[in-house]
Amino acid sequence: MKTAAASTDQPLKSLDDWEDFVEGQLYPEPGKKQKEDYRNYDNPARDTVREFYRLNHRYQTYDFVRQKEQEYLPLRKREMTIFEAVEFLNTLVDDSDPDIDLDQLQHLLQTSEAIRQDGHEDWFVLTGFMHDLGKVLCLFGEPQWAVVGDTFPVGCRHSGKVVYPEFFADNPDAGDPRYNTELGVYQRGCGLRNVHMSWGHDEYLYHITKDYLPESALYMIRYHSFYAWHRENEYGQLLDDHDREMLFWVRKFNPYDLYSKVPKKPDWKELKPYYTDLFNKFLPAKLAF
Image 1 (cartoon, helix red, strand yellow):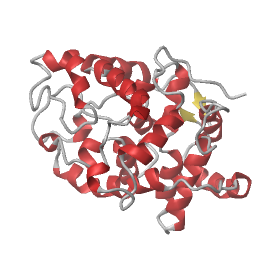
Image 2 (tube, rainbow, N blue to C red; image 1 turned 180 degrees about the horizontal axis):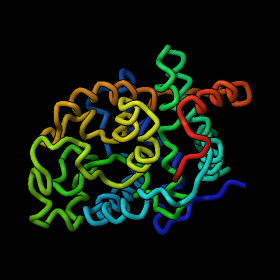
Image 3 (cartoon, one colour; image 1 turned 90 degrees about the vertical axis):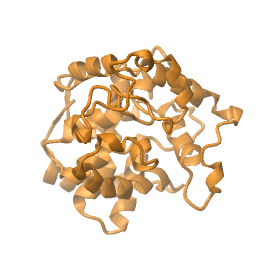
Image 4 (cartoon, rainbow, N blue to C red; image 1 turned 180 degrees about the vertical axis):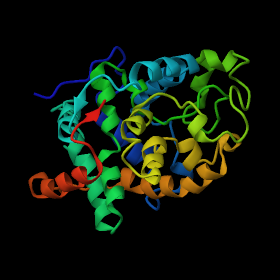
């Protein structure tokens, strides 16, 4: 039986609620809505998302992120094959979820199959399949606001282009002179690799995969939720030339993540041999989580 994620704060019914909101409301498919409709947050149906961000922006502090890095980045929670990780992740989906009846495996497959159908490199296909596996954080007891959502740098002033910026008023760092300036704890042009991002599945999965995938893939994984950068062109003071070069790949990945859902489910039984070979090409038998 599929189970809900352990959490003390559940502003969303499931992680699929987040995916549906991002795809259909926060960042709609280009051409489907007018530009002025892209960030209209007045619809009462989004109350759960507002609550999600209230918690996210309140508690994602510099100290919180450093604590989570120390807790998780030694990667000692457990070892899993990628098949076991997907099965583990699928327990996050509630059978009664009123979405389009896609579990996490189906979202990953639809993303990766859309990339494959467009003829991209095999590492790009693998990135599409793996990009959300860091959401297993929920099953280690993390609340949703510390797993999904738009990411942003901590340790410096929050951008007004991050979704629901008004909620940062309750973040202790907003009143701390160490963290509330343009650069905060960083040096101008230090590069994103030296910046601590709000904690979530992107940063976690980057560290799980950083020894196995090309750098372009790692940028896609690490920054695909950093919309203030790749969609809003914010935080330029922290970027170096390499970040600006890699931005191409993050933007190339984004449409496949948001707009690859289709009603027909991919046939996992038919596709599994292809993905087994793909996993074996790039990954060890087990990954450390």
